[in-house]
Length: 96
Image (cartoon, rainbow, N blue to C red; front, side):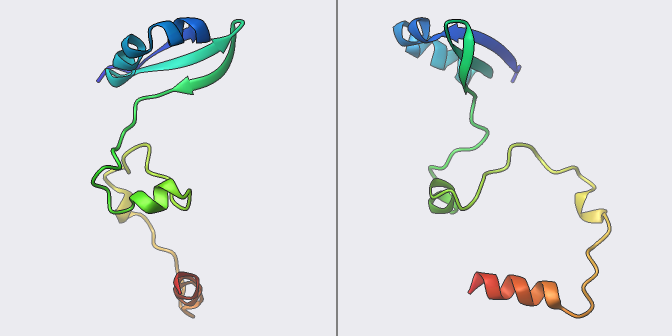
């Protein structure tokens, strides 16, 4: 999917919303302008909450969905050292 950016005024966006949303679906990010000043952006979603088990957490703002894939070597990196187990204890307490 090709990523591009386009500026569009609020008036043009309102008048042709379906066409602009089709562009977003195809990968275009829209910068919405008011008197030529950017006020918002509309970007394609990289995920769909429809069948996502974390849907409620995302919608409540407790979790932010990923925006990019982790590098392939992510899990091969150095691990956090926690010989006393304090990090594990803290995380367990936070979950309860």
